[in-house]
Length: 317
Image 1: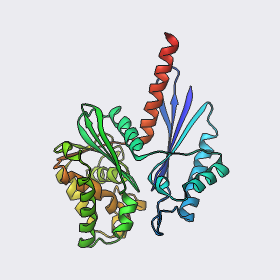
Image 2: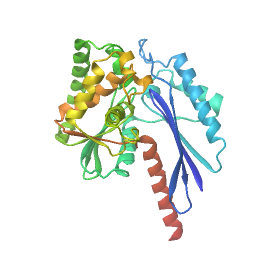
Image 3: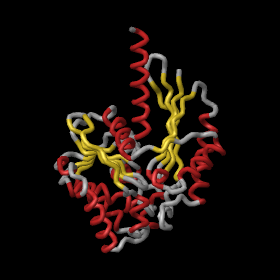
Image 4: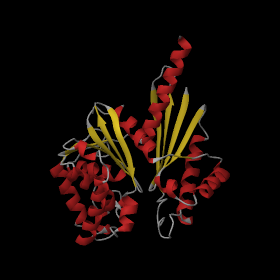
């Protein structure tokens, strides 16, 4: 039996999933931990993107809390990955060295396309979808995958996310119409720069990331689902999506924090977080979203399981 732990250090949150892999190849998820660290907060306040001391302090505190868990696990395999905020930071090396010094933890900074590929693995292994456009909206980046016949045909990572868009266009409080227009125009132009994206016209969107999942959670709370957070495979029509976005837009941050299904710690970044999905839905004239609870961490797990299966197959030959 192996304990396989994956840490995903994003721009907004830091998450860890621990999975017990049994000798027969089966597996059981034993831990799902999350801390909101806002690592990318004020990263672009200076001329060059720089991780700020307060954000680094929050992140290291979160990683230390994870360490108290994984240090107790026998036969541990640990993979720690960092994405957009760390990827673009000018003080990346200094930050990684500090983490190594204080926790003895090596963090791998992965390219955006690798992040998108892991998202694809997490989805294709757990949802019955073969043709779609996948979107993972994080705090500082947005990964897009065109899936054709179950294969990742094209992948890209764009430098937009819930935190970065909210800060760039001042979407944290009450949202003026001109600020929303500028944000959606900016995102629309980015989508226009992705030459293959129009090949996804009319396909469903498979959405990952905390901001996108919030769309599903709000809807499930409104419809009195017993477990409103169980959104994996949940589907919503475009009309329901637009109605939810409209309800979010009518409130300031304080009002949004009271919306059932919307986490209070997302209230100031949720508009910026939803803008990419809403814009893409209109861009592709898609009529539905399918939500995935599985993404990068699950993708890393499936890659590991495949490697183990291949290794066992060679041994048995």
